[in-house]
Image 1 (cartoon, rainbow, N blue to C red):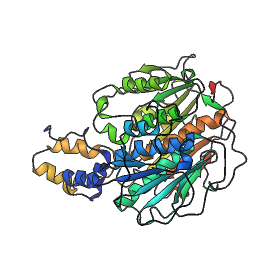
Image 2 (image 1 turned 90 degrees about the horizontal axis):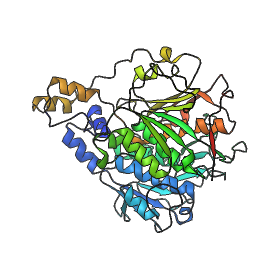
Image 3 (image 1 turned 90 degrees about the vertical axis):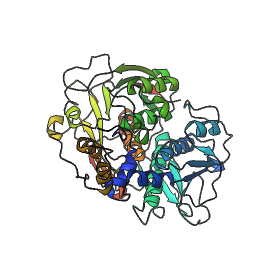
Length: 455
C-alpha cells in the first residue's frame, strides 16, 4: 500500500464525511472539518462548582476533536480548578492544556453555555448545559426549563457536555434540523425512558462510595472515556483506586480523533503506558497487561473483580464471562456512518453467555464505491488492498464514547449505592428519548467489589 494515506491517520469523523458522501475527497472532508468552530462560555455562577467544571472540561476535550477549526472559551477563567484533574491550577490553565483557546468568538460559531439559567434568545445555535444530581442534559439557551436541584455528581456534567457536543455537531453537519432547539437529557441513576430528568428524584443518593478496584479492557475510544470519567470523581484519596489497564495497541494519529486522553505527543506509544502515566498523574495506582484479551487466562483472587470493557471486536467480547470477573460492564458502539451514534451496554453475567451474544461479526455497509475512495484508487494513492483497509475502519465520535462511559460507570456507582442494575441499555444519540433500558435479572451481592469514600 502506498504510504501517502494510512488507515491509522484518518480522522474518524472525516471518514464519516467521505463514507456518507458529504465530501467527494479526503481533502474536501478535511477542509470541511477545518471550518467547524465551536464557542464555549461558562456562566459566572458556575465557575466554582465541580459538576459545572466537569461539564466545561469535557466540552473542550470533546469539542476540539470534532470542531477542528478550534474551540474558543470565554468566561471568568481565572477561577481555581477545583477538580483534581492534572490540568493546572486555574480553569484557564485547563482550557489551554485541553487544546482550547482563551477568547470570545464573535462569528457565527455554534455556542455552548456551561451552566446558568435562561438567557436571551440568540441567532444561530446556542444551548446551555444543565446538570443536577445524577441528571444531565441540554436546553436551548432561552428555555425556562431547569432540572430540579440534586446532590452533585460530576458524571452528570460529563453527560451534559457530551450531549451538547453531539448536538452542536448535528447542527453543523446538517444531521438534524431540530438540533439546538430540543431538550435532551436523562438520569444516570434511573436511565429509563419513562423518567423525566428535569424532575426532582428523591431516590437519588449522595455520591458517597467510589470504586477502588477496576480492570479496564481496551484503552481506545471507550477505555479512555472510562478513565476520564473516573478522573472527574471526587476521590478523597485517589491512590485508593487500583486500576489494571489492558491493551496491546499503540496510539496512532487517528486515535486522537475519538479518544479523549490521547494527544499528538503520545503517537507511537503503547496505550497502556500512556494511559497509566495519565492515571498516575491523577493520583491513581496502576498496573498494565499488554496481551490480547482472551479466555486463556484467569483473574486472580487479589485482582479487581469488576471489569469495564471497551473492546471493539467480537472475539474478545466472547471471552468476557470466562476469565473470572464477578461483574463486567460492556459497551459497544456503532461503526458505520449511519449508526456511529448508537451504543449498547450489557452487564455480565447475563441471561445469555457472552459466546452466544457475540457470534460471528456481521459485515458492515460497503463504502468502497463512494467518490472519495474511487478518487484515491484512481490517483494511485491507495491500491485495492489499502482502500479495503481504509474503508473497513470504523467511523467514530468522542462524544458517543463519553455518553456510553457515563452509563457504564453509573452501573458501578449504582452497585456501590444499592441501586438497580441493568442488563441492557440501548441508545441512539439521534433520538435518545427512544432508548431501551432493561433491568438485570440477577443480584451482585455475593462479592466484595472494593470501595473508596468520596471526598
